[in-house]
Amino acid sequence: MKPSFFLLRTGLAGLGLLLGALAHAASPEWESPPTSHKAVRPYADASALYRSVLPPAPEPGSAQDRDDVAAVLARQQVAPERRAQAEADGRWLYDRFAPVLGLQTLGRDHLPQLVNLLNRAVKQVGGPAFAAKNEYRRLRPHQRLPLGQVCGRAEGAQPDPDATQRTSYPSGHAAYGWTTALVLARVAPQQAGALLRRAQDYAESRVICGMHFPSDVEAGRQLATAVVAQLDGNPEFQQDLRLARSELAVRLAALTAPRSVPPEPESPPASAPR
Image (tube, rainbow, N blue to C red):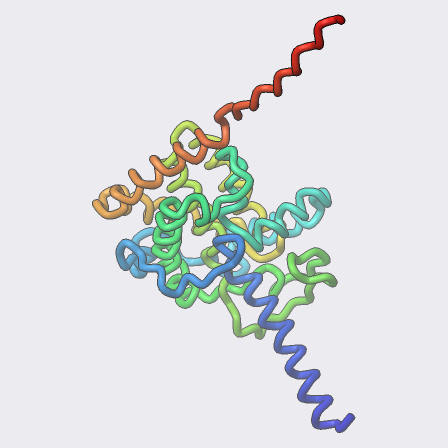
């Protein structure tokens, strides 16, 4: 093998691993199976909303930052089952909330109106979340701390203070998870409490993963709350919400309806004794 070809192949493999790690950190797959959301249109442009909602990211070495660091280090010791849940939370979004509604999956094949509603709301919260990331440019926990357990990385991570990808504040996963839960709570209000508890758990997974500090996930919650509060006054959102409610009710009724059992075939009459 020629050295130049070997170096090129090695470099491309390394780039693939890097991009895979960054994609894992940046956003979950909203739907399963994955699909492109480039054409999804938010209900409104909320990109500037973070300025009126979020405080600045904690300064390195501040009291809040020290608390953040201590929390991440403490959550390195969670049980294997909880870490596995955190890994799955990092990869997927809607399906992680489906069991709360009594569903195995939450996909467009059976619930297109609901998925459309969620897609547009999640797209809307993504605007201010990534605008804030670009402004505050906070290092992620795994870029600052020696962590033995980091989601998506078999061997943990060593500090990289010169990392160019500084996207810890706010947590996009937390913003997406809370938006999903808050919208679903409007679709299925009887499950609101369980959905919000699941959103808290989903956000906590990012701290367990070594991808975010607690203040990052709290900022994601604040953004999601502000975005969904805006959507409550949006007529187009309200129309889509009504469609999603009806669709989900029909789907749940179909899944819980007792299935009719076909009658057993009648036995032929016994022959008369001769």
